Image (tube, rainbow, N blue to C red; front, side, top):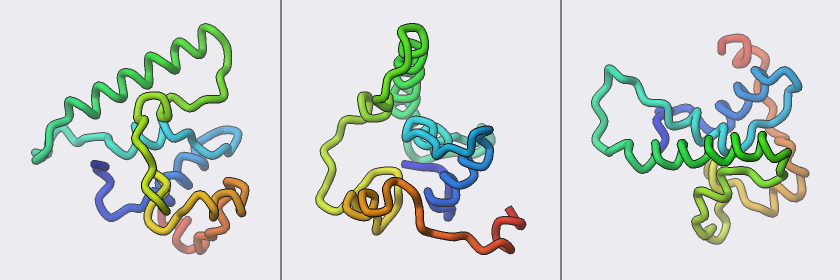
Length: 120
């Protein structure tokens, strides 16, 4: 379960894209890690063991890819290999389907108002 509260994946994805020097869209692995950061001062109902293990596996795959050379497969897809439900794409939020992503070409047509972006 993500720990972002009321923030959406679109906001997190935009924030990570703005932090990137090349302004590229973040990978699913990076989005997964940033959406599950826990506050050490807060008590959670669920355990963090499985999530932490998944993150360690992703980091190991990323370091292995850096040593061997670039791979076009995202470590998230190798670690989290759950079957997709019809009409659902993980880490994109509600209402995003593969057809919508294919039509747009992985670029979001959602535009944030400038006032909102400046407040962030």
